[in-house]
Length: 131
Image (cartoon, rainbow, N blue to C red; front, side, top):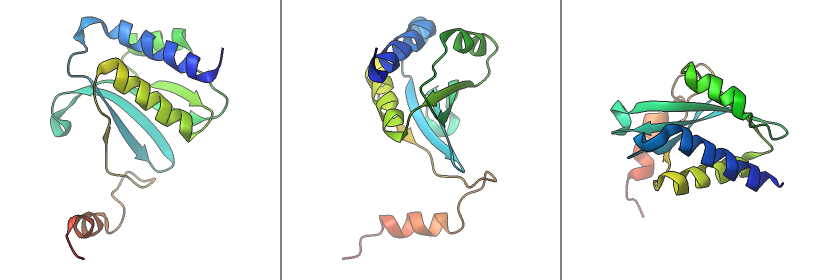
């Protein structure tokens, strides 16, 4: 089985375990320093309810369904290992398809959990129209 098939089966598992309570569910991509995470959330972004959190590491693919079930039961983070960032994007795409939604991207945080120095100014200047 190739990695995309493994990802697809894992997403199907996640969707089924959430049952009928997945209306309005959408993936949220975030980074804390060099670490990526994906949340499955519902509601408005700033007051969202986080239904699941996946912490992503890059290594050989490892998506353990039994460990994931335990984490879901205990309402703790789920650890996933993916081969590379392309597989992270593939996972997000499959989650979008499964929940019929779009990924929301959070602002980046440095390794201490703070906004990058100058982030607000950079966001403002990026949105200004200057030709």
